Length: 462
Image (cartoon, rainbow, N blue to C red; front, side, top):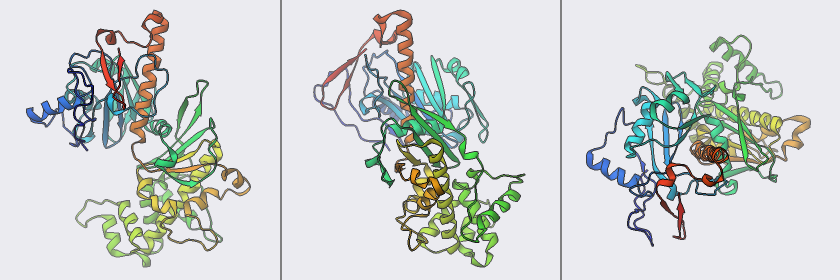
């Protein structure tokens, strides 16, 4: 996705060029770039579009680092005397963006070095914030499935970045939610009144199941608190005399050699949909659509894929009864867990449903494509299960529920966090050295950079 240059802007001083943020669509450049010298030169011109040729001020780096890819953004910090972070970094503060396939690199440090090289940087940014798919403990995160160990302190030494902050990837999702206009960027699942300043909660099904909540601090900013709620126990539901979900738990306990429990994530995730379908195929072999089942399992010669996307597509087309039943059970389990999250945090500021798998299942979650609509319900399985909480259902009816359309919440959120960390650094520096330097880094005093606002006025930073 590489937008064309916007061309020269009115009132553009000679030392400046103006262009949109460059998003190079090449995945994974290995240990170095795969660009020709000509392409590299063109990239560098586009990347440096918002900077003077002699700019020596601060830059910020943010990355959303998933299990399979890393999405990187280099941009200018907030301007002088700015005390609050805007919901989105405007295009005229963006320097360079790119994304990489992680399996092309031995370490995440190699990814960062490649990115900075492609951006044409001869010096590192001052601060970086990385959202990582794992638990962060004392500035370290282990990527078990990739064999990476990301250490903020070690990377500061290896790359020369003054400060690196690691945050959980779902915490970044939470910060990204702050940037949303829910009535323009979301589907409204329950149109309750949003209470300003009340807690916000986020739940998102993807490769796993993420959960987080946000509370407003004394300064009026929301702070996000990640949780590992996706690893709590799954509570099966019985519909009348049906014990199907209880049987599914027993099946999964055997599959995973679990002593006494199955986590919600084993069911409410992409892999969870596969687990549900596998159980149903075992329970009702006479209902298996052999063509769909073969696509799901993978080719006879291998490898085995157990691809949940096959089940989703089969349900959308109505070609497989078992697939439709699996999707319905998945949506019900997802809605039930979303209701549990709402009970815990009472998020009258909004409960946001996000995640890559969530977006692929949007029509089922919203009820636009109902599989087995109950006569007197009128609800999707998701919302029906969300509200099925007995005596406290009236409380849940007061929670605004939104389904997020976009899949860039992690990228938005980590950029917000990076800017907040920068402003915190500046406040600490100003406190230590006096107000004369407030809002300005030492490097920023060396030169000036112009940023062009939408009305073409020039604002001086530095």
